[in-house]
Length: 257
Image 1: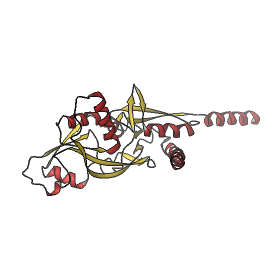
Image 2 (image 1 turned 90 degrees about the vertical axis):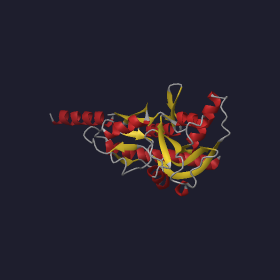
Image 3 (image 1 turned 45 degrees about the horizontal axis):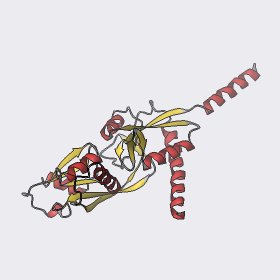
Image 4 (image 1 turned 180 degrees about the vertical axis):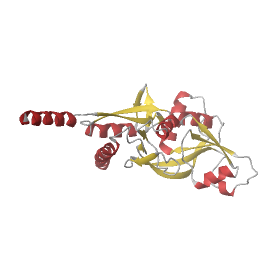
């Protein structure tokens, strides 16, 4: 009887050791070159990083990356329905429902691109009675510095939230907005995409105007819902360790190139 109990315990431990949790990370599907859909497949710099890290912990976790509109992803975490979201900046006060954040994936440089004749450079000194500048951002993004936030309250800027980078760049190229604020690489990618799809448009009038801020991108996790996601703390620990390994490999490859 004792031998049977020991055998049963060993079998139970073996099954538990092989237990694999299915973990879904929601991903911004319209944020090239970091995370985006291409021919129906989710790809991008951050997608590749997380998939590589996921391979290092696949003995316990089966990680699925699911493309969603950014605002829907935020809403899923706010409602406690989603477990994780890729790739938010850290906004602890504005998004109290996200905590903690993963190790940094990469630093992004947020800049303003404007049509010639429009500029956000000296917006704090501009006339409050002047025609406000129409500035586009991606829906759900929090990427403006204090100067631009103040300019909005002063009526110097009229903010327009558009679906994604492509939509904003297209409106910028058609002079429907004066400026567009987003990550530099993502905006340059959007400009190339618009140039390819709309060769009739003249993009020579669009110039980089100013750097707005620098922020690191992360995987952001739902703050509560520990009962719904009992593996949360262990997964975060293991994913962080795996990400650090992948990032170290990437940096080493960059040095040796």
